[in-house]
Image 1 (cartoon, rainbow, N blue to C red):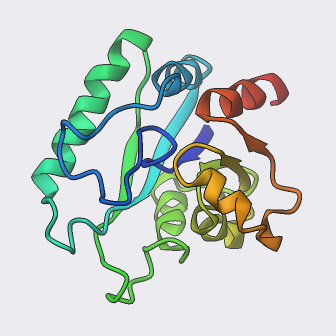
Image 2: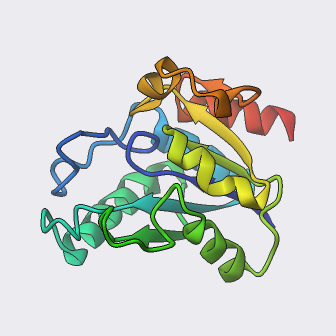
Length: 180
């Protein structure tokens, strides 16, 4: 199985420091729907690993989160794109769970769910925590400049040395499809 792991906010849809709290606030980043369509058509299984601490903070509930994901599915349909499964951490930063990125729990769930190693599986994110969460599994990390990506790059994290960086999900997908 060809698997790819995507972060959600800042990679697929616009991000906000005030959280994406409603279906109306869930707005795809230009080109992301087409990119997911290309991945789907190329035979990739697409998993999304996303921190959603807005649930723990009471900004929105699971039903609203599901409605956002339903909207994404509807928007992907014209591009023949599909997200196979969302792996969600609903906890806040003080909950000390193992699934909140940068901890590796969501990636462990993905490996277990698909019953395969995720070593060298592309994992696209917009923050250092996205990169760190997949490191214990040997994923192939990619950073995008959308969302928090530029801020992440400006902090000059030593962990980002040798990690490919692309302008957006579309550019990262073009790289993946051209090189694998």
